[in-house]
Length: 247
Image (cartoon, rainbow, N blue to C red; front, side):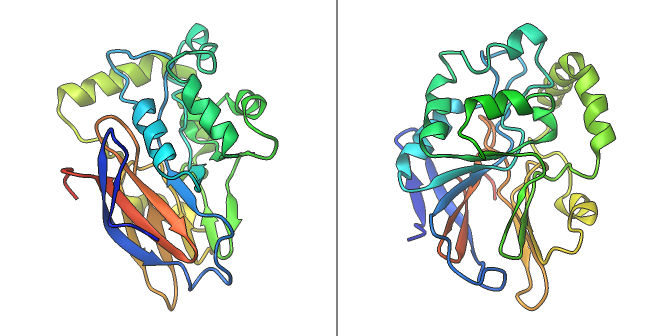
């Protein structure tokens, strides 16, 4: 049952929207899913990082039957120096998270900030768990959202250890929200004929559905400063946001 409120002991989350997936799913999901995106995990807290692994662990524990789905940018690989990247899967701070993702057979899409970590992710998670490009769920295309901009991904990865910390510090100094791009702008190059697209990348929760034609859904991001996600059960999806956050 898609609850109106989920309380994890660390935070409470309120249901903001309820979406029927029936137009795009011929059969209900065999297993419920907890769908999140853009977590940007780092091995140790820095002045510029904004991740919240403890909060996500608590959310996973609060939904024990649900399979975790990451829609990309699980790690902040491009913003880390090579020495820091080596600590992503050994850090005591992140170890409980990796343990839960392995135990639940999580599905992980590679995002642009995961660039270069594909083989490492595949070594850490069960076989078939890591998707470079996403997957299809009935007539729903499940993606990260940055796939049409491969060249830009490579460029950002090359300058990431300098550019990402500077960008994040500047965003915080300017008191800018976690949102990155309008969903409609990203969707233009992403849909490619799909009747419905479930994607992340923009850090901005939202949805638009027309049951006769097409739709899109974005669970937003799961950071310290902004936390939202989706839960899928049967042929329904609910969007949740941390209680007290601005819709």
